[in-house]
Length: 587
Image (cartoon, rainbow, N blue to C red; front, top):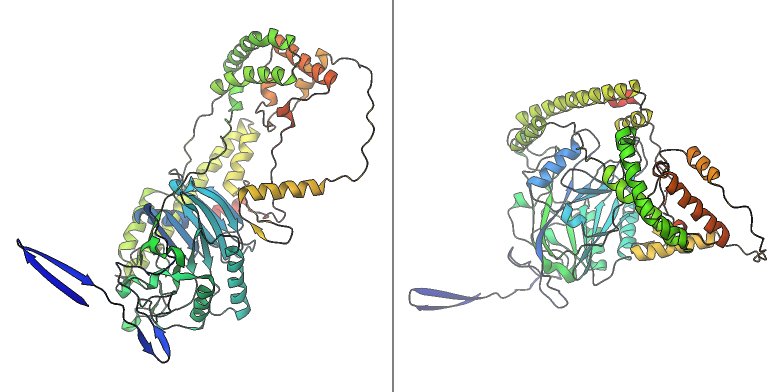
């Protein structure tokens, strides 16, 4: 190190030039990692501008159980984490859902095993959620989300590697699956892999892969991880920053702390594609975080510039239950009838079926969206502030007083059981009340909510014909189109068209009968007009419907909106949920 000193006007300026020294040991060239203020340097490294985001990974040792998710969300908020990758969720199935009132979203990937094994997930805050392009669940050990940024895409892959007792074949399958996911990404995209790798890479420097600030000694699984990183040009970021050992270890072994023994390892990592390593500003563990797990979260500060993904406008749902109020029904009928009168002459004079239908649709929906606007009901939660305070109190005794920590942990479990029982009791009373007033629809709805049998948003993998995974949304839509076209392809020759003479016109009585016989509570099509609203039409409205149907019958032209349908993909291996109410009450 060479330094020059210049003095003047009570001011000292130090010019420091850092010289990198190469050390040759045992025939191996070792390059020391840089300080915590620096990252790797080299050609092909791209600097990323943008806001600093907190991205973390954590093995929480199960989120299957009352209070576990709430505990994770509390700690995520306390640490101001924007994206949290989770290992060992033990959740069944794959999908996504909003987890709190703040709009945080969880994407999860698991298996169908009722024993609740493995599983991975990623929780994102509402800002990152706006930029999520796609979610790809691969297995109960691997998943990926694609985030849209100003310079392209950022791919975040969350993993959970097999433990040391698993056979080598399972390890190889794990890394092959990650390579399959990486093959769907592009080299100019930022790609990071987070998770519990159950591997120790140690503190020996491997050029372009690890720094000098790993922990412990490398094992066989560590060799396999380093080999993978070399092949895929990945850097293990939490070995490149100089920190105290307390900020490096990610897992405390069962014997840690007994008789003064310290058994701590670094097995959770954040991997970054080498080209973008300078976007990582710091990586460290938070040993004070607590979700009753023996792992610590690994938190990285990474610069990203998010870009919002354009979403389809959400449909305005109508609260049709308000039609039970005769005053509201009569008021809405009158308003719709006034609107119908304004378009009556235009409809009868026009021969365009699209104009006819749009006028009827607009007359119905304009007033209905005002009168039947649903009231936002705040979702009730079973967990109490007292329980959350106890969790915070327990956190303070982590690694400080084990006896007190265990005592508080038992208290938390007991309070959770009480709170859940009281919550379920209130739900049961609500269900009984709905049964007494013969509101079977809402009664069954509440039962499904209580027993966990409501349909969740499930996600599957879309592949090319050769089995290649598709992550791009536009390509997914195109692939579905190809699949459906192939499925319904008809090789038979087209039949000759026969023009029939004009038939008997549709009668007004037929339309009235059809409306009367239409079943309630059926999902509306893309036009958003349910049968309940069509039944509100007065004489003029019914006449316009008769005119529309006869025009369609006479010309053979159907309104364009009626030719549009919503394509819903249903997973073949849907998870069968057989949950009894008694099991819920006793859990």
